Image: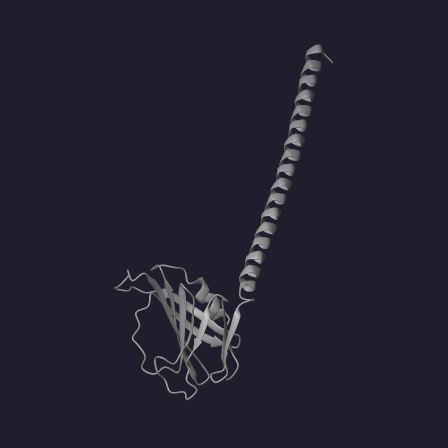
Length: 198
């Protein structure tokens, strides 16, 4: 083989070795980055699952130590925060009047519940809840912010109605101190409703 042929062969072999080495290096680097990325995704998914579980547990457990109000005549119960006080004037005669209701309240929130109200209204609430009853209690199907003419009364007012068996329920919830307070506590109270009679 001539000297120039040997040089060409040497250059070609060097190039092949360099390209092969570069390919192997890049492949290993890509595999390593892929493994790192998969590990990061797995860690994020695990973290999200843990956070969701913790949030769900915290929400579910928050009402565990609450007090329970129960009414045997109308066959329902619900839980309420221990900071709230109950006033119960539901008349055992079953005759409706505005004053015959269950009220729970504290320094900021109050909730009034009437059983079998007749001709009571109209209402101009900030939030209108649509709710139905299920085997497990009350299910809120929609929660809509209404357009109230008086938006500066310094309260947030929500209303809902639902029927269970032969009984109709009307519930008002009011938060003093703001026109746009979140209604998280009302949502929680509604979620604890149970019915003992059909």
